[in-house]
Length: 54
Image (spheres, rainbow, N blue to C red):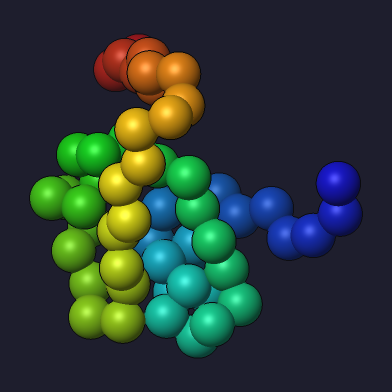
């Protein structure tokens, strides 16, 4: 797969608002990273995402 690799969620959201990015993210991302120009679209046909604080 080719394309940009960004280091932070903020950088990815900047690309999304510019129309040049996409992100699969856990549901809580919509709460913590609400931004004008970014739509979080839920889907239910995928495996649950596990994450944790390290």
